[in-house]
Length: 171
Image (cartoon, one colour):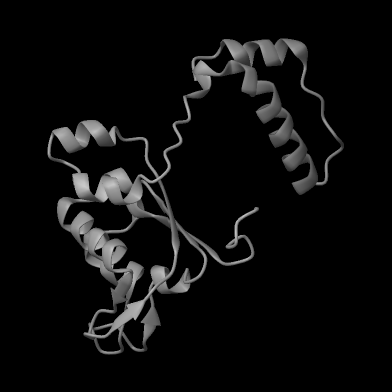
């Protein structure tokens, strides 16, 4: 909220949901005629995020070949749409998330060390909820308030016994 990009676009991409065959067209875009259903030029997610932020969720799920393509874009700060050779410069903040053990995957050869280096400028490790049960009450209150507003319900209260049960759950 305090960054220079705060008022710019935020594009979220679930990399776990994009097939290998759609990866390049979704992230980098394509030119009309690049493939059978390419009826018009289309910017990819990186171009759409220009000057803003792109959030790459589930980055640990990428295959080695897709990791290589992503690394090239991050290093060169350009994208090449499918069906063209023209490089388009991009200026994006990249935020990534995963629940995969990336350091272990690097040591096993399943994740590129140079890609990890490129994306790991600032690392935030958020422990599972079971290791921070003191957050449960605030989270529960947040969701109760959010859903009461959404469904136009009167404000609900969290019963003390319910909170205790939530805190005892093995998140």
